[in-house]
Image: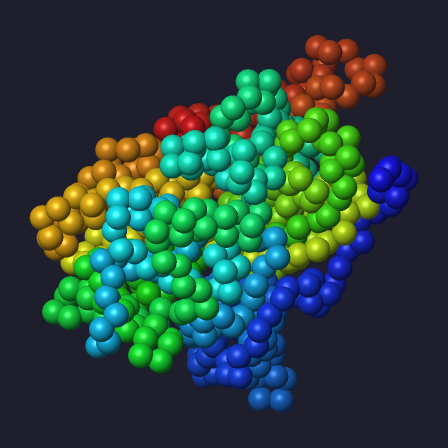
Length: 103
Length: 434
């Protein structure tokens, strides 16, 4: 197969975070492996987990200032609980969660 | 407790766990490796460089059969400001012959799987899709592990924890200090597919040669961290890793750091035409040597990332320390097995082996690196930025007499740098970072 260099001179197509999260294969567990202490989250002026999570698992519920946990998007780095101890992170059940194709 | 019993249970089938399993199985030890992913490597990630001195001892000339991507003949360390880069370039034909400077790019989903298969072929049992939920501890002695499976307890003479950077079991059992924003890096990475021919042309490579580019300063907004591009066979690994504390300080998301890095005018042309095929993230431990726990307990050893064995300096080595610690743990277990004594006192042999090796010598050498950079941010922000401007000005052609250019450079330096402070910092940097 011959390569046409011109095919590779176009700018790299930047994917949105949602598109990027969609590239990762997952087997979803029925229950969340992440818990948030909602009172402590409300008391966090920085709401750090909202931006600290590379998969944007945590979203603000504007109605009651609580934290929504979209655990299905989790990439299993554990950064949330290191940034803020009001999150409790456990490994998903064996065989569940992400499987990287490249890694 | 169930009847299941192995001499050694290893938690985690990454490079540390698989190295320990391989070394033990070869000596006829009954080893069980428990892995929570679908297969070894399924959940594993790194930037992209595998340092292979330990692998090459375990499996000589592994590159003939192992799924490595490229051997690194060209390394660059670069600093960026908003539109300019300067850097150090090292390319050598000496790195183009075996053992290839023990430096290869790899993709962990493939490589870890292969490495764990070597342990299996040597006689270790590897069971995947199995999460270890807690250590079974009786009267201070680790007796085994509790898995998420039904009837899931497994007893062992010794448990080797190789659970990775997110060291939940070790931390919760009190066998390591708490993970925190100052001792954990968050790294995000994309794998960007490109044909091998394009990679080789774009990065001046031939055949299986590879290149590693690491970026500092403005590339990561002057934080304690770095960006990277590593060439795989038919993809690039592109990412950024910064201390979690830095993201908290800047109120910034890791993917925004990555996106800004990828969009930089010095980076974007290298990614042209590439298609993102994976987005992934992991933590990297940067525990100082001074903060490490014992790493050995009654019936327990800690190896690899969960022990905190990463060189946080510009060398950024992790996988080779992981594998070396796995081998040292195996040797300590073999020695303890001869006298059937797996007490803490006996297993101290593991730590002694590490202390005598380059692993702990290097961690001692760089024990203050991260702390020093956090306390002297000029080294990752102001000074690299100044260096870029000075070099750019020195080589800017505009009919200014060179005498005047040099006078201007000295004036810039004097106005921006406090001489005694910088002299002290350079002296300390030599001691803590070189």
